[in-house]
Length: 100
Length: 239
Image (spheres, rainbow over the protein chains, first blue to last red):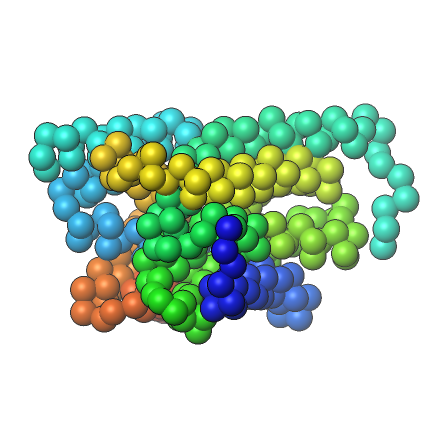
């Protein structure tokens, strides 16, 4: 059980960044009046960010990952999150096993 | 603005248990992801204590995985701190949205609740707020098991990493991507969402290919935002 000072500082920097993002939404709604256009633009950020996080895995890693993402997206329309994730993981394991 | 009395029929324990029931499937889903995170952190040279502290203090899976992706020795606090800021910028919008639905929270409780905001907790709380009043006890009921599972499974993964072997063999490394694919589908509101996702995806893949680091996340977010602004302008001109 070691605790390196450099690593601790890195962890605290990450914690400070996440606390900042989590709190600033509350501060924001106290001070900014939202018009329709601003609201639409802000609503676009969550899907855009989540997409940006997974896109390299989904489209630029290999066929197994790309196909498993597609399968997960399709089953997510019908199944709850847990079941969709299980299907996605099983799909990627299967495709990797057959050598894709 | 402290709440003096709770409405009848909503005992604090009942609300807490209802929250625990609502979050249960997501607790099961986050368990393997925490295990994988712990195992990945171990391969990057983090001790079990350091891994557990990161999960407990940061409590944001996406940014923790991205940090492992760019982890170096010695750890660059500017690099991982900035990456956490970029990856979690969506929390600004999430807390702004859920913050308008916390009328039964005192000011202090609102801020404490925000410290425990994660995609899964936020989504389930938004869902609850759509049908009934969001209470602090119910929110504590979803946060407690989810937080403990994330921290506990990270520790277990760090300790068992050597036994789990390469998580890619059984596809567990894909669980995090799969959760985010499900979240993307949850954001779908029609063709306009499709254009935003396409712009974000193309920008992200292109920047990821040519630029080292985590700039691809900011690039995708900005491309999606620009697309939404362009759509808004096109709508106004058509009207």
